[in-house]
Image 1 (tube, helix red, strand yellow):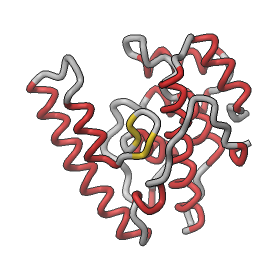
Image 2 (spheres, one colour; image 1 turned 30 degrees about the horizontal axis):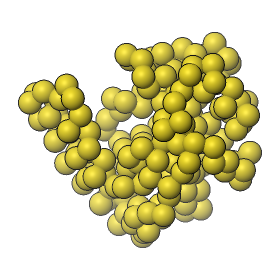
Image 3 (tube, rainbow, N blue to C red; image 1 turned 90 degrees about the vertical axis):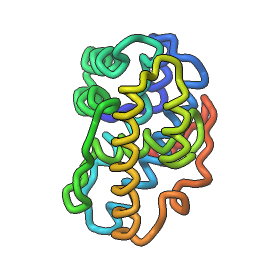
Image 4 (cartoon, rainbow, N blue to C red; image 1 turned 45 degrees about the vertical axis):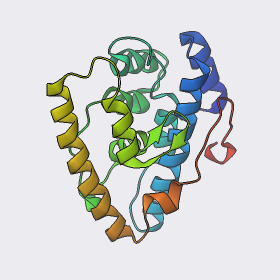
Length: 185
């Protein structure tokens, strides 16, 4: 059972999810859809419904501590177990699988790491923004730098393998809180 736009809105309303987070989720859903669809056209067998459903609500509880766990718990309570499994892992997922074993978690996390608020910005800009957030300690910054470097290398590898840059595939993605990507239904 995939999360529809109507169900997304009901979950957002239940959790009091602010408009800017709703827009972020919509942008991540669009980027995840484009990446997943492109990979499926090249021989992978990714479950686009689950990817998009999870992306639509991955930051459902972003204003709460441990938002990944809280969001996954809410999704489980509503019967969205496949999406909950992706949401619970989206903040600390690493490393990515190699392209031949790329899965739904990889797509969601890659999309989320390239979207800042409501627009695709790429990995460098996204991490630059994250590094400036309050509470980022020097130790955490070092960890972030390692993840950034490894993710950057991974993106270069995947772009070479699939023959298109993520910028070319997703660079025009900008979403608003109430955008409805009906093709996901």
